[in-house]
Image 1: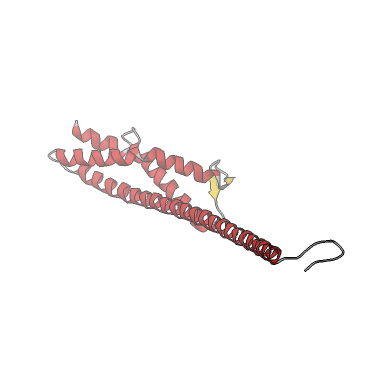
Image 2: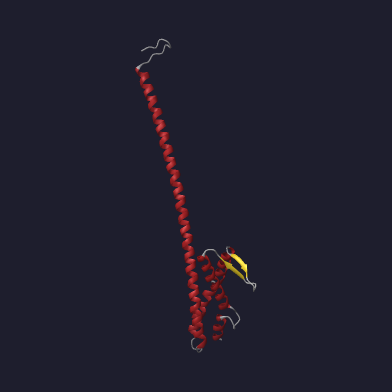
Length: 182
């Protein structure tokens, strides 16, 4: 088949070549489409993975905070128990040397955590609304009731522990029990 105007001849080989070319263009287009689709799916998966990592980290931080809260509540209970045991030891005779040693070891462990509780309280108070009362004491308040409760409990714990470790025998429980050893 010859085209008279251009002098171009359309042959079966040329037809096959054109068909192969069209198929290649369609294949390349499909490949590009599939690549873009896969890339989009990869980006979505990456975003979902980042979201999952952030959620896992948030849960871990919440869990850590819960463990810290449980530790504080445990220390409050331990402080109360040790104060009750100290009253019993102070009223008893000196034959209880082993009990006194055991009590002092538990009291020292609790006293060692005082600085950590002070730091936590300080960090919490930096986020509080502060107001000075008529006596010059600062009152810390939070809009969130759970945060207010947390502050109040921690404040009571720190105050109780400070009295517990006070070196003055009039105030400090540990120093009075140590006097029993002498």
